[in-house]
Length: 336
Ligand code: UDP
Image (cartoon, rainbow, N blue to C red; front, side):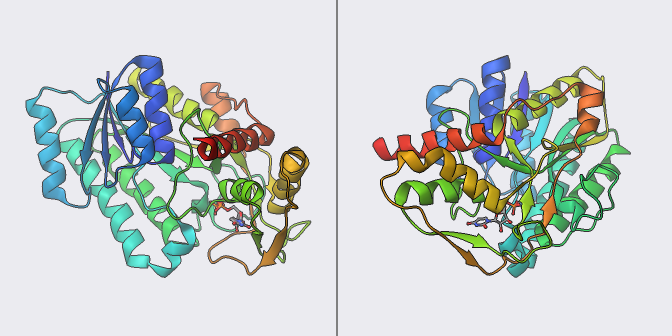
């Protein structure tokens, strides 16, 4: 089996690649603009399974050459998983063109080339941010879409373009992630800069730095934002399941929420982490309340019954598991 993974050097992409190799011994053709430590680990451990191409998907000529190259090698792609995107919500509010241009053009080029080279199966990494400020909680897939940031808008437009290409024979599954976090063994979040709550919080705990909570005046019970955190193990599992269903032609053209149906406020995550890790640190952990971050919506909690009912997918892990996995990962980095 040959799987093309865009953004396969990134956090979710590399974790998914790892599991695809473990489970199917598949060949993974990774396209990414960057080389990362996660990619290095994959290349080192699975040299026969990984083919890496460092290209900018917005460059149609380069991208086309890659497809041509795969074609001449008779390397038939069974499915594409499209992760590649700029993903920092706050940055996307400052750099509108960068986000819309990159995330939309890369998707459009990918779809056009898939169509040209008759590759018909796609799993797309979408985002719960497409819903914007929730009109009701939990949010199901029929909730109106009202993207608040350029990042969210780029995901919504990408979904629209994907839907357009389904008229040309594309079979797709859009996965709208809520808040993925946690690690899979030696693969974790290595964003630069890191902006996500859980890795920053755990690093603050370990390093004794003051942690900043962005806003405590949101319309939520404790004033801090509420999110639905899904363990990366579960998130990746949902991709594998969807891919199998697509390949077996048991499903096509679906959009699923991926979350755990339960929300935690930022303050609850901070308190839970202190409860679990306080005895492991030798300094006093402190946090401050900072200004709201641009583009943050108060509550995102999934109604994730659709994928459970249609595909039998049920997440296994809890917030505590996520926190522990990130703690172990960060501690291990220090002791290396
Ligand atoms: N957050 C925070 N401090 C941080 C990082 C994040 O208070 O150092 C908050 C952020 O404002 C948001 C929530 O944690 O309300 C989740 O943010 P994250 O970037 O992890 O994910 P997002 O929901 O933006 O995709």
